[in-house]
Length: 466
Figure 1 (tube, helix red, strand yellow):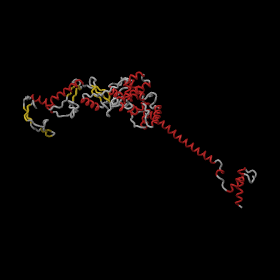
Figure 2 (cartoon, helix red, strand yellow):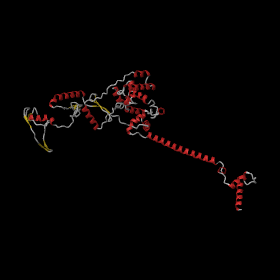
Figure 3 (cartoon, helix red, strand yellow):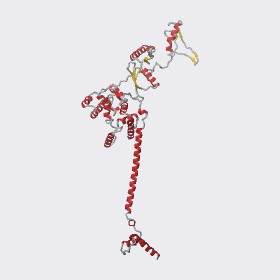
Figure 4 (tube, rainbow, N blue to C red):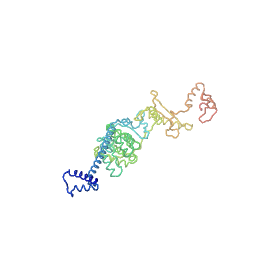
């Protein structure tokens, strides 16, 4: 009975909820069907909660949207942080070695009349030199801009058009065939060397932005032209012009300017001392680019292509070797920079005469054991060195490079003229006989036993033969 009443009360409550408490329904009505179903088994979830699947899908969509928004917020924050870091990087002052880099080492020693005695190289063997941008022939500037970076004055370190072109060409080729390096990026690599590959390119790009933010275009171009390797150990257009053209970057022809610019891509392979054919091919390509950029007229380029590439053997002056070696040592000891041109007091004409005289004299005395000689000539009024011969032949094997002017040695022979003069003052003559026999002298450092050069004793010897 109690269970029946419970069912009746439940049925009444459900009817009231479903129909708002109004009237009875027929036994075949919807209400009875629901009541009957509910009094037996639990309603299926799809019938008990209409629209539940749609609600679940809507909830999942909201979760996905919320996740996308969260990822977008993180990405936006990272982008803002990267932008701020980039702005801070470019605004940060340049290091001293980048803002004011030292010139590439290269020293030229001259005699008192301006004749070249010797040129030096850097520690790595490279030939250096430095020429201000204002003194470089404009044709050289135009050739390098046409060959390496036509939009140099239009970008701020990174050329977006060149990057897109490089990406397209690299994708088509399936490998890296174009790097999109601007001239500023190349200058950054020369000032702050970085590795190869994408990380190296990224480093060059960042430094290029920083260089452009702090240095004028002219300063960047001057650094590049004086630091770019151009083959055969040359660094910069000054050393390259001297080696390949036997001239100066201050005045070159159109063909010569294109030749120098063509060396930047593959300096060790395409320089004229290695292959005249490849050097000519790349020079002509640069001339075509100069015409396309408006830097040269077609008729001028045609004439430049007809210019022969005259290959001259490198001429590296190396005169007065002992003197110049000593002068470089003095400069290094004083901390003087090994850059530029230094005029010395040496008289090259007098130096050459004395070198010949020393060789002649030693040749005459060779039968009597004379093998070495040295000469120094000073200007008594100023103390300047006019000539310095340290040995008869600097290139002779053995002691040729030993500088007898400054090398420590026993002073016996140097003192003989003074000893003989003192003996003559005391009555000795050239015919006087001296005993050449073993003798021991007591000194503060112990006994001293003088010996002849031949390690023998000759008994009685006249002074003229001693």
